[in-house]
Image (cartoon, rainbow, N blue to C red; front, side, top):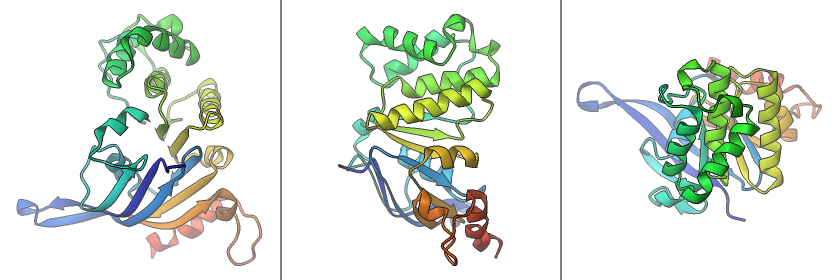
Length: 252
């Protein structure tokens, strides 16, 4: 089965200074694979390069060097973006639109067939608990409601790869339970989920494997059981303890 995404020696340096002659390295030679049909966690401290990798994968930023493929095809093949759904932690939705209008707009951008879009949107609004608020402007929504709407938007095109960037930010208990259920359903139907999160219990509960980035470099890439195994004693450890050990190079 073709991997959902493959990063090969990816480098991203943001230009700085006069005429962009300087540079701030955000990602330094990252190579990793997001396997199809699995839930993959992307972990790391702030400024580790996680968001940069997601932007590169979504063609929202340009590579400095290296290659990335989506579903076995190069980033230049923009048609593969129609197979990706993305839920951001801070949505910038037009606040004058209603929830239904927003999903109709994004559904068109995602290539959802017009004949099925209204039904799909209504089903998703029901699923995320916003059916009774579908006609209200987003300006009246709480942060948690906007997050749930963002989840519906990310699922509109039934993506083969669902990218969740800090998805539980602002969600209440219902929202968190809903998110967990959606992730499990995606995996059960052979879809892929890439989770970027600092919420360790959800990573441990939902992810099959993970990569850990520190200062733009991969310091771990493997299964969750391997991540939770102490390299010295072989004994099980908490995810927090494992990450504290891996984050040490940053402090050094």
